[in-house]
Length: 221
Ligand code: SF4
Image (cartoon, rainbow, N blue to C red):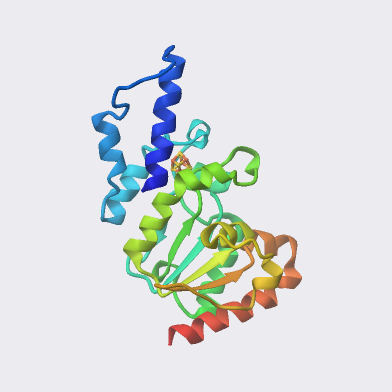
């Protein structure tokens, strides 16, 4: 909420600067802004709000906002990093070969349907050329993700890839060092593992991910 407030404040101040203002003592937030600052308490309304978001520069090139999807009361949530181009084109999260691999692992290793878990990303908009996430983009967008977590209330969050783990926990330990452990937070446990798109290039690491997901299955019993 504080980050959303700051991002919106900066955006409005830049707009005023472009209009030639050197300083302002006026209230810079409009009525629309006040509504944006109140994040809704349902996933559907949150998705609707995010779909009109222009808080960071990623909004300029995205085709559509890729919000999380799945069971709104899931015990298990997966968090990746950012939407791919195919997802931006088709309007759905975790598509392509990586998405298919993730779906297969959820079904075959954990024994659940993809629709029974909740899937989301750090960022809701596809960055051009798949560039790495900029810290400011995450800090602008994270209010949506944290609200999703607050609403879904998962018991376990599987972070997919180093960026997802680092940004969610603020811990910069390398993924190959932290993987294989369970990080306990106040309301949920985090299992860090590799992103399926990374596994496509490094298939020898699949067995580590299988181990992580078998642990998830045991924890869910
Ligand atoms: S990435 Fe997040 S903060 Fe940036 S425009 Fe998209 S929804 Fe808004």
